[in-house]
Length: 144
Image 1: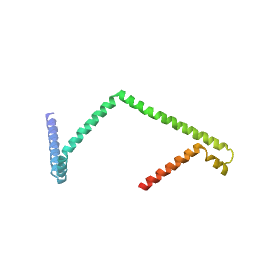
Image 2: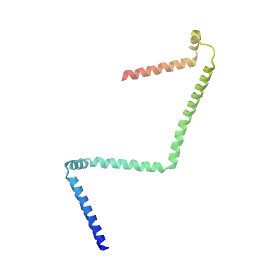
Image 3: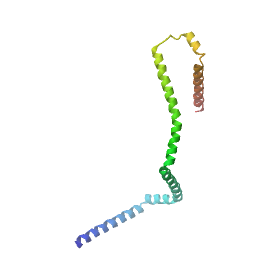
Image 4: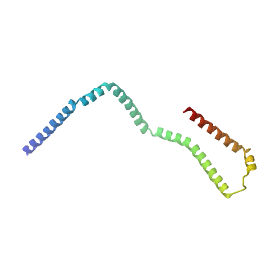
């Protein structure tokens, strides 16, 4: 039994020695030495970055464990998104209703009907919006 233990210990010692030689061989390579030199030169910056990253990590840990802050943040998002969702639903239902009315048909809109529609305040608002949108796109294109 002791012979087996001795053989195992010798095998472990040989492996450790081989690993140490492998590390020494790696350290003797010029590219490894250059990399180590560059790493040592950048050590103050790396230490500063690690300090900042540790602070960020600590803050993230505190925030992730603060249930009240998480609930307040979610509540704030919901307060912002709820009115937007209602507006989207309102516009979508108006678009569906308008599509249904248009599919039902109705009187044909001719030239005089178009002239009459130009006086409609909603159409005027839509035309002003379209003109402003096209002006903005033109300005952005000319700036590029």
